[in-house]
Amino acid sequence: MGNMRSRGAGNLQLDFRYLGTRCREQTALPDNPTNCKTLTKLLQRIEADILLGTFVYSNYFPNSKMVVRFEKQHQRLLAGNRASRLPTLEEFAIIWLDEMQVTWRASYIKTMVILVHNRLIPHFGKMEVDHITKADLIQFRATLGKVRRENGEQISAGYINRHLKVIQKILDDAADRYQFTSPDRLKPLKMQKSDVDPFTLDEVQKFLQYVPEQFANYYVVRFFTGLRTGEVDGLKWRFVDFDRNIILVRETWVGGQTEYTKNDGSQREIQMSKPVREALQRQYATRTKSDYVFATRNGTPHNHRNITQRVWYPTIKQCELRDRVPYQTRHTAATLWLAAGENPEWIARQMGHTTTEMLFRVYSRFVPNLTRQDGSAFDLLLLAHNSGGVK
Image (cartoon, rainbow, N blue to C red; front, top):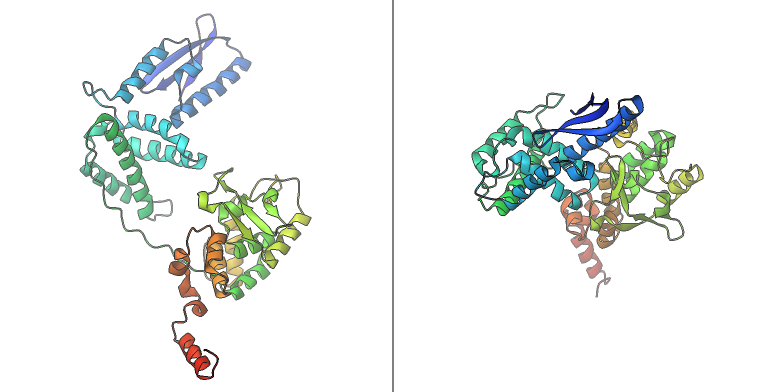
């Protein structure tokens, strides 16, 4: 943690660490409360940039003697001069984060910064990148397997696999740059298949009957559009087209900010059913100055964890339905559309899927009228043929 102190003629000096080096930069600002407040904010920005891997010394202190030193260090790491030692994992990971973040969403940048700084650097940070072996990765995986959450449960296989994927990516990129062979990839741990457990139409109607009135419109839209959590939470009125009877999915709410959708395929237009249109019209009649369709008193989208614990699960319990996560509303929309006999290609477009493969692979078992595994469809064909109904 950096700090400031009064030096020399009573002017303030910044003192912080960057790439393992202590940095002290003298300012011309006298030691007084106003200047202390100004430099505190500056120091916070510096430390945030260092944490994110975006800190450029010359941007803050262009006339400092330290600029040349850090530029040379950065160039040496990028050049991969084999005559000297290769960078440590910590040194290269900071450069890697800086170079990669232009390709990532803001929420993913935060996730990666936390993962690299809280998990990878503490474990591998002092090791040179070409010295990390497959055995080291196996040991790291074993260490993660012993981590317990606050409730005592072991972290998931998916969580472990995500860490291994990132460290392997860092090592692969380092190997390409510095011309060494990265360790063989570990086989991902087997992940438990996520449970698809949609609501029946009776269950949906029961839920909507018991849910608090101020959230009824919200859940009507969730159950009957197939919108993802971030998509419905981040829905803005300018993307609700009552004239064309469609909802335009263009953004999502992630990590407390608006971002591009999950992928290009998620950019889509959803046809409003009658219940959805009526719910949105009721919501529009009570709208505030907020841009968002479903907003708090402050005009911001709801915190999905808060609304899940405060509204979703209490309503589930009151209805005496089995516990299910809110994402099941998306699965519910798909199964209800299929059960109603809607065109699978149309359903795929509503869901943001590029093909119908997932519909039949994931949802067909929930729709008896779609699969007819009892042979009744063939019996009806024969009956129609014998009665002269089929030529």
